[in-house]
Picture (cartoon, rainbow, N blue to C red):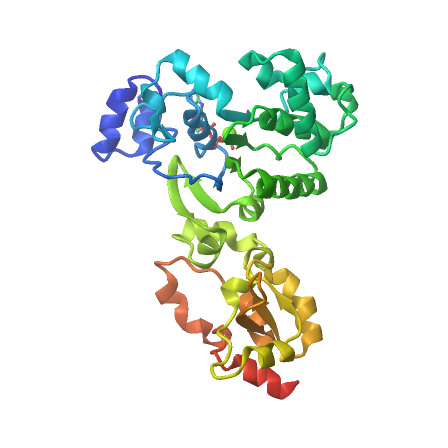
Length: 364
Ligand SMILES: Nc1ncnc2c1ncn2[C@@H]1O[C@H](COP(=O)(O)OP(=O)(O)OP(=O)(O)O)[C@@H](O)[C@H]1O
Ligand SMILES: [Mg+2]
C-alpha cells in the first residue's frame, strides 16, 4: 500500500472494498494478494501493463519496499523480519538487480562498473576485478574492460549491467524491464544471451516485462498481473492454451503461437504396435520436445509424413503429423470460462485424432 493509513486500507480490502475506493482516501493498493513461489533455477516472469504493480512486487522481493501485509520468504528466511543490517547483507551478497536504464557510472571504466557490486561488499580490488573480468567475458564483453560506458552501444551497456549482477555471484537476479529500452534486434540478442547464460549458471531469475512475447520466450513460469493482482500463473503454454479469463485471452491474441508452442505440446502418440525404428525411418526428421512449432515446418516439409519427436537418447516420444502442425496454429485461445459458450463454431478446426498421421500418409 502506498499513501495514507496503509494498515486501515489493508483491512478495508480484506473486508471486500474495491481498490478504487481506497484511491479516494489517498491510498494506492499497488500489489494485492500476490502469492507465488519461485523455484531455484527458474526464470519467473511477471508480466503486466504499466501500473499493474510489477516494480512494486519486485522491490518487495529484495526488501527495498516493505510489504504492508504478508511475507517474503527467501530460501526459508523471512525478509520482512530481518533487521536493516541483515537485510543489507542479504541484498549485497545474494540478490542482484538489473535495471532498465543500465545505471552505469559514466566516470568509471566498464571493468569498474562490472566490479561495483563486489566493491560494495568490500572485496579487495584485485579479486573483484578478476571476477568482474570473468563476468564481462560471460556477457561477451571481453576486451572492453578499459572502455568508458559512453563508448558502448545500448545493448553493450546493458551487458555491463548484467555482468555487474553476475559478478557478485548472487543466487537471485531481479530484472526490471531490463531489455525494454533496447532496439528489437538487440533485445532479442539479449534474450538469447540470457537464456544461454542461464543454461550454464542456473540462477534464479525474476524478470519483469510488459511484453508478452518476451515473457513467453524467457519464462519457465509467467505471472500475469492486472491492477495489482496476479490474474494467472503458469507456463507460457498454459497461458496460451488455457487463458484464465478474457483479459488474458485478449492479451495473448497477438502472440506468435508458433514460437511458444513446442513439439512436445502438440505431438501425438506414435501408433501403437508399430516398431519405433520403422516410424522413425518413415519420419526421418527428428526434433526434441522443446523445439518450437515454428521450427517444425522445414523438417515436416521434407519428411513427407510427420516429424518424429525424440528424447536426448533418440527414443521416440511422439510424432507431429503435418495436419496436426497446421491445426495447432489455427486453434484460437479461449478463456476457460467462456470456452463452452463459444465452442460450437470451432468444430472445423478441432485437432485431428490420433489417426491424423495416417491421413497425411495416404495423401503423400
Ligand atoms: N512510491 C510510490 N508512491 C505512491 N504510489 C506508487 C509508488 N510507486 C508506485 N506507486 C503506484 O503503485 C502502482 C503500481 O506501480 P508499479 O510501479 O509497481 O507498476 P509497474 O507495473 O511497474 O508499471 P510500469 O510498467 O509503468 O513500470 C501504480 O498505481 C503507481 O502509481
Ligand atoms: Mg515498473
